[in-house]
Image (cartoon, helix red, strand yellow):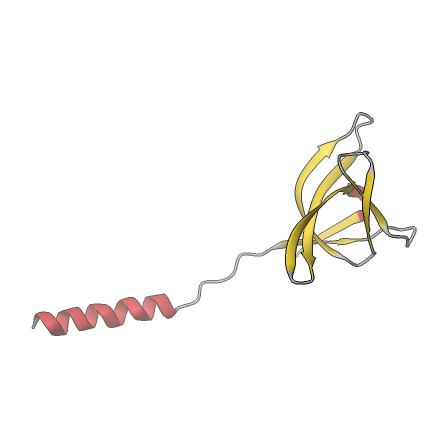
Length: 100
């Protein structure tokens, strides 16, 4: 009797675990520089240029800050050669985001 009850409970629990919950929407962004040139990546908002990202590059925003002139900057990261990395700060106006 106890074994049957245990087995019934185990089957129900395994069935519940097998049900897939909907995946939460993910906010993803793309570099969309209207000049069609690579977007400068900086070490801090409006800081020294340390890299550049091509238009269409998928990025994720980690942080937003305003500079002294009240312009919005985004700290971005993304995947490169299968590895996730934080790239640095870009002018927020040149990043377009959507829910995936």
